[in-house]
Image (cartoon, rainbow, N blue to C red; front, side, top):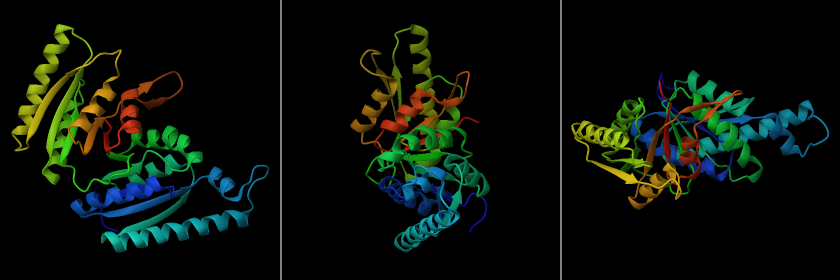
Length: 289
């Protein structure tokens, strides 16, 4: 295994979507000249599911048999992926809570990116995967997360969709978009949605888009900037931007995640979750520092 920041972490639940996420990771790994760590986490519920156990705990032998079966399957995927992509894919099998182990491994290997599916093709796993594992990983990941929710692998991120608002974390997202655009010789399409006609907001947003466009263009990246006048009754901010991405052949939507806090817990902001769940192109989520 290479040194620090020379790995991309790809969690897998052996579903079709997670296989596609692994394929999506190939292009990024090739570009960055890094290896892939392919991680499968065995959770207690998955052992019970594998053996159809409802009324009793699995025996020690059943647990060992399941671990052996999972590792054999993981090793086959890793060896096949390495052969087909010419990228070293390191299989890793752990027991525990999926999102906790994903975050632990990401920190241990100094992952450059986490690439993961937002959906499982297994209907018994779909709800838990979106609601707990994906959201918790993205919320506290030590690196950017590239989530994959479609069925079309992007060989190149030729068009990056960069939604902007008036939050103070804008600069971090802009710099990450520039980094990606330099890798892929991309066009960056900066877009904001106005759901109000309040003059102060309109003025500030126009000024910010102009500054951001000029800042990116000074880095020799072709850039466009657009403000969409939306209607709250017709749809939310994310639906306008996803429609814009589709209309402009977007290959990647780049977002900054936000925490919303209630009396019990922290969870992904509603806009971030809407992008991750509904966009049919990859979404790169960056946690504010």
